[in-house]
Image 1 (tube, rainbow, N blue to C red):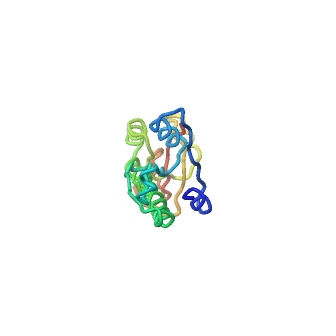
Image 2 (image 1 turned 90 degrees about the vertical axis):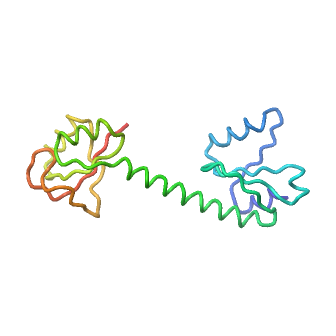
Image 3 (image 1 turned 60 degrees about the horizontal axis):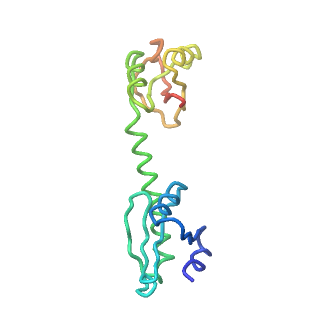
Length: 168
């Protein structure tokens, strides 16, 4: 009954495999990227409750079965927001600034991430950076920052900020 009600709202699977342990099942679904797991046994049904486990924080939340559809929606939205914030922070933490070629080479070699620099717009500079470091221009953001006055490669006046990174 719980499954039928939730299946109308969410894409779900019920795991009735008996030949494997619960730990194996939990790991199997985590590897598939399932964001939440609902643990529901005979005693839980008697008590009108279940356990919802978040994949991102591994937090276990006890939920009344009547409140499950609404609570599940809230948990999924919270997971989405948490994952987005975490990703955004990781990008910020892994982005450095370089004002000359020495800094650029050091940053790209010692940090797995992006490097912000100023660029003159000359494709010869872009090719030289690619040849020296293996980094490519990843994007020219709409919201430009002034991280220097000169091109990181040739030293000419530059007014375009570019984010560079290696392709893995």
